[in-house]
Figure 1 (tube, protein in one colour):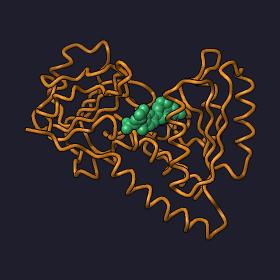
Figure 2 (cartoon, protein in one colour):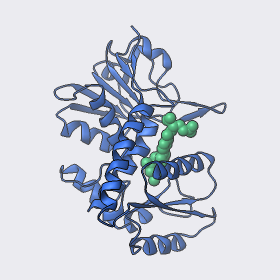
Figure 3 (cartoon, protein in one colour):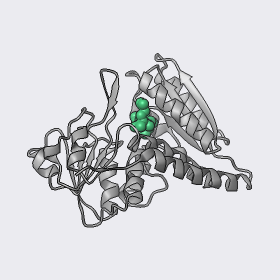
Length: 278
Ligand SMILES: Nc1nc2c(c(=O)[nH]1)N[C@@H](CN(C=O)c1ccc(C(=O)N[C@@H](CCC(=O)O)C(=O)O)cc1)CN2
């Protein structure tokens, strides 16, 4: 068997086209979606992601502002900028690229963003709203995974779903979105016993571990949909959390690059459009 590759690049292009149409419609009412992106420090991967977010804004017809701050920026300085942006009427969405330098508390910065402009959906009030299923914004990576599943006709309803990883950004919200769609969800992590056995039960397996090639073919049920959220660099080369050999067992699989990554940025655009429409 060779898995069908779930093309996040193609789906992104399609969704961004629809967002551009919506942007034009919104502009008729005098509103142009605006996104502010803050980057602190010089992490090379973050620089790439921020550049890609700027490009996505252009593709979607958005107004954007980029703030690049030095690595030694203090928390108060960053909070000051967030406060300014909270009050800037041209800006509907604010995001601070993670990770932040050690002297800055990510929690404090996230909590300072106006929840109505929190297009990453990381603010505690937005996280709480996702838990109860009454939300405006979905976190971008899990939302991108759900769009990919829908595009390929993979319905979580009644299916065994296993998420490896319990981060606030991916693992926890991912589990919640699958649960909202009536999946039977198990969250696994570094202390999980019999991990391979649990993974082998999954019809939908999401790997968000942060370890290159962690999911091997023996951990996958034949025909399963395997979603790779990993973004690891090994000898300068980008690779996911899923061993490419899994393609011989899985029914569907997301590639890295070109799978979930591009969808993450497209979902950010979708959230920004929604913030502007509100
Ligand atoms: N404020 C945020 N910080 C971070 C987030 C986030 O959603 N909000 N997620 C990640 C990084 N990230 C977005 O910011 C992100 C990672 C990867 C990609 C992507 O398109 N990857 C490409 C490959 C790109 C490359 O060559 O390096 C792919 O998979 O095809 C997009 C966004 C942590 N920080």
